[in-house]
Length: 124
Image (cartoon, rainbow, N blue to C red):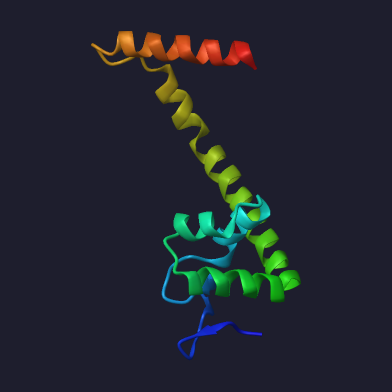
């Protein structure tokens, strides 16, 4: 079942996947918040969607739950693979940057940051 508003499809398939028509917002973006059980009004406001758009997205997700959930899991898997790839590619760069001394004049800010981090880690 395809959701429609104003005679046009509300959910379309683009190169990015299932997308809310007239936006760059995918159903997978919305699924992150649906899975976390955020209220529809919050999701609507977060993505600046009209009531028709959020209703169409949520209706489509519910009507096609199995298909959307399978695609969502694939999107999550690919995102994790990309995160791991870029983390590995940049590991050496991050280590080099971390080893550099602070820029002159920023020592106090770095010390404050270190103290805040130590305080936060001691609470954990």
